[in-house]
Length: 179
Ligand SMILES: Cc1cc2nc3c(=O)[nH]c(=O)nc-3n(C[C@H](O)[C@H](O)[C@H](O)COP(=O)(O)O)c2cc1C
Image (cartoon, rainbow, N blue to C red; front, side):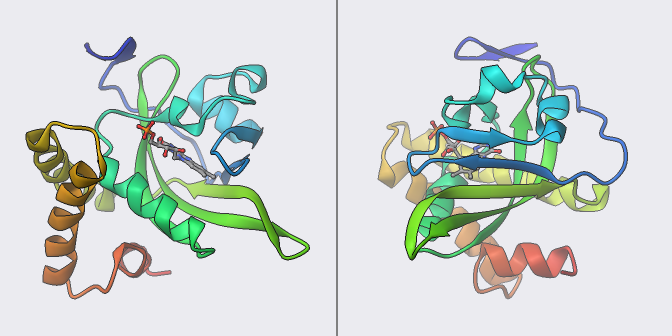
């Protein structure tokens, strides 16, 4: 077992049975305002533990900062974002999800964000594990937690996407999942 800040990481994957839509909503700052029962079951948190918390409560240390950087830029432009995420459960186990994150509009105003996640096919996970490892190495080499660090990860991602002939991460993720 290794530790990230005070959070244990077990290296064990959560076993998810059947097809599940794992949903949550946040306010404009990313504080959780809604969590589906499936999210509670998979993450091991109670509703009380999640509501009001920042969504980074689910962050796994293997996730590149660049992915969230791109996600926030995309949704703050008013667009939807598709990506693959590994999340950390309360007990330190992890689970991979394919996620769509998008703005929630009410009377023409963005009032928050919503996310729906599905369990991806097993065969696509390996590729993301190695891509994200490479992105994390580039980010960690930079050291400082700033925008420049995110851009180091973005550069690795852009090189990878260019090799795959994809315009951006959303296009690549959707193509790979044949959606
Ligand atoms: C609707 C919505 C859903 C999110 N879902 C997740 C998630 O499942 N896992 C995660 O690590 N971050 C998620 N985030 C991103 C977090 O807000 C945060 O940017 C990320 O965990 C990185 O946090 P950090 O910069 O504090 O390390 C979500 C954000 C929004 C707006």
